[in-house]
Image (tube, rainbow, N blue to C red; front, side, top):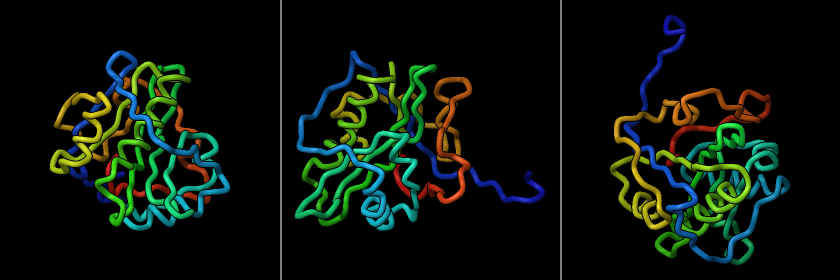
Length: 183
């Protein structure tokens, strides 16, 4: 594959984790996003991730958002859900720059984490750049702890479980997720 593609390791990332015993819920007014809201989600993500998600990512994953004046201003979702491995991977955490510093990222990340821990995961993980203090503080407030500081963004989330995990919408036509932002 290296003869055809240039493979870069990506930025250094800290892999963080939480389980039911360490999770600290963050009560807030958040809403579970539906597949019909994928347009709003993709508009928000275009501000920072250069990503595009298909409706199946929301239908098969867990996504929560916060709206202000009807506009989606913060969202978080899942990269991976594996009931068999007891693992969920949170990602796609984004808050519009005009709405940062209000606890919205904590609220949506907390909602996704709570849902995963309640329904399918014994442990939830995420990746974050070690140089971005606000996200590190958000995740720590929810009870996430660092696993390591040596991973790269290119490391597959299933590596945290040490096994094979099904990622339902990966590889389907009509969508691709960029790796430009946090987890």
